[in-house]
Image (tube, rainbow, N blue to C red; front, side):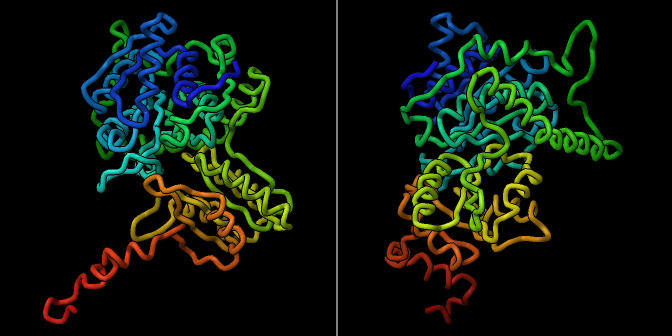
Length: 402
């Protein structure tokens, strides 16, 4: 149903339409509105499930391990330090192949403490074994949660749906929220691949030694490799049920004849689309490639989408300290050995606005970009605080330091 709604409430409604049987909730900004709204739906009788208020994020995900292992459809949400708090359980869920769905309302990691948006939290867990889907809008966020339950239960893998904290979670806009009837037509009752049953006892997550641990990881790797193969068909089926397009692997925009393509994920994709429209009107051959699926990385699809580009600019809201771009490395691997000119632009860390004007400047001077750019870096602030001067003194003996 089309409605003017806050992103968090749209996601809560979409999750409720998927009829989770167990929800474990521990609030942390900016995901709090999601679990609060789900609790209201439970209290009002619109959602029938076991809703557990727990004492911390590790408890939230640990509770879902038990619930999922006995065959329940499960859901939780977290953000930032909360995702780090549950990191041990994050790896356990993936290692057990449990189809848990979790929203990550992306928020910067501390220290220093920062409650605003960037992608450092979900990127820190990119190799944990969870599928990662990224929403470019609140419409995509609502749809991706429906898709996530179907995908998780099809390939028996946990799925993390990432949406930009505050930028999306607290923004009110028009969203066609999938209703229960449509979701029922798309999402069958949960039939687990494996489950704990007292009448047919098995061991789940038992100790595995060197003689088989590599094989366990190999099986997980092969399972992940199936995701880019399975997801397009599941997306097409969802689109058919909803009667409109649904998110898939990629979100290509004006890639026809584009010689420069900007790659990004999250809400900045929408801003980039506006920038590209203006650049096209000015005669620049520019396009945008949004990544809806980030883990596993859809290398073949990205390679095909960027086949005509002579220059690729990757806009990232997190980075590898001391190294550079995270997504850039994935793009580079997918294009090897014929890698075009490739640039990383780190933008919007800690919630700094990523404006059309700044991105317009990036597009206009794409040919002159260095390998790594920090967008809108405040050189005056660095000079005033003496931060770079302090760095230069590291490792210099005190008697010769200025």
